[in-house]
Length: 255
Ligand code: ADP
Ligand code: MG
Image 1 (cartoon, rainbow, N blue to C red):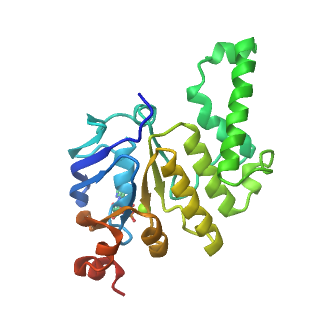
Image 2: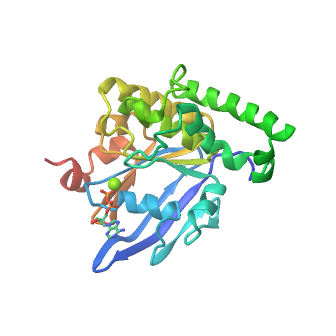
């Protein structure tokens, strides 16, 4: 795949869990290089959408296309290979690995050596490992974790674990990055840093789908916003319009 921001589209997604319809003919589109926020009350189906996009769930109906190619039903590793990376609502790091090693896990699938070369430590392995280490250090700088490379991930403060997860996702060289509630549990200052990090990510040519509750962050960073309510898309527009949409205010902003 060439390096260009991905255009992404979900059309008519329906998924049922027993009697519950978690998504009901939900459609949304992310333009190349766009920062697109997906919002809605708890249980609206946001994480389910992410799980379908990344191949963890298979929809009962509908299509998920990346640059026009349907991915619905493809397994997670195939979706990842086509350029989609994610972070999880609850961070899923390797706690006993170092910060640097966690990022290197993300690079793993990009290296050309196989298990054989790794086991026998060929020259090629050493060269690629050095390059990989170098690139991992650059990514740690990108997310503001320079100086923490050799710490065990489990000992990092929560906000830094969040950033490490983003670095690991970026290591897979995604063209579409999905962030599931990245601001949850962060301080105001950390949310400001996250805001800048998301902008810098998009500036690299990576389309971003941001699932968030933090209204200030969404209004600041998103180019467009899609609103889910009980599995139904009730609005999709620019933040300023979303913020004043009576249906959205009633379903989501209205307290
Ligand atoms: P959100 O992320 O918007 O808070 P979710 O996508 O996690 O919402 O959940 C939407 C609905 O689907 C919820 O009612 C949730 O309980 C249900 N749900 C999600 N995943 C599953 C699953 N694997 N099995 C059964 N129900 C699920
Ligand atoms: Mg969720």
